[in-house]
Image (cartoon, rainbow, N blue to C red; front, side, top):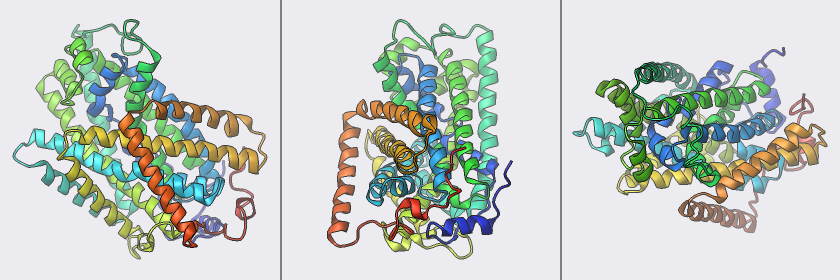
Length: 480
């Protein structure tokens, strides 16, 4: 097995793409895996269980299984592109270098809709949950507290962020284990309310449009595995292992999602009511926990959700978003001050502060809207799915067209299937999400046209005088 590259070798590799090593290479494979799991949140279904249950006709586990399969195609495409271009920026870098810089700009712009909104959405969900537990403290105060805490941790360096995520993953898995043990015991005692197969297949409610409609919501739980790619310049493992960590994180998270939603589905106190009326209060999972173990378990799962979303998940989301802004800024496709690296902590400090400010403003505004959480959720999904479409195209263009790869499975079949699945989800997304999403894309197109009109067309380091094939190291991105 190949040894992980040391920092000088990795820095030299990065220089071949036209960049200097500015971030701290300190993350191990385990750090990347934990980061991805925390970003996806092992207990993510706690907060949206009711919506997925109602939307899938009670087949929550099936929705998550399909969602995991759908996302696996994207994870496999990510693993190929991170080997070709082991640098920060994710889809922005892959589409820009794999296809063309203007496409990269638009892909980066679209995924910004996901990355910029995610921290604000997480802060808002967590603050609402904490307000329900401690009504004396307003939502706005909780939101500001979460933003300040995470900003301080991220500012202190990626090593501090990694240490916090290790602690949080243990805490989340402990709560999940408690719920599963108590839930299984409750089912053994006859407290279940449905057939054991109902969470996977219910002949009375099954239809593919219904299930795929729920998948578009369930996919929200999987968003985050791609955030691992943002840390490519802070990892001390070789590029192929970065891709492997994304696949493993997705498999682990998906398995946990299926198991916990299967148990919760069988403990829902009134399945018919949940199907007919939905879960406007967002308490369906906690109601199932109460049915299994009482008020203490309902309170524990609610508190864990608030902390996981408002602290752990939003912590890594803020880190990933700041890296995307940093990558675009150093290519002069965002304001230059966002590319500034703190000399001591080795983090994009200005980008971190900007993400904090935007998250706070968005969270406070959306807290005043009745549809704030649902609107932000659909926009996040739309932005991520659209960017993933560009990812799959990048694989085909870079490997099949440019490099004449004959690895048809990984470089053609997988991305084409992944593209088809995601296109179906995007087409069947809520109309509001489609309208706002395409408006955002339109704004990006106008900015791109303006850049060309003013002589500032998008350029990527190392590609100004040569194409991707001339600047890419021969050993990077080879199919094995």
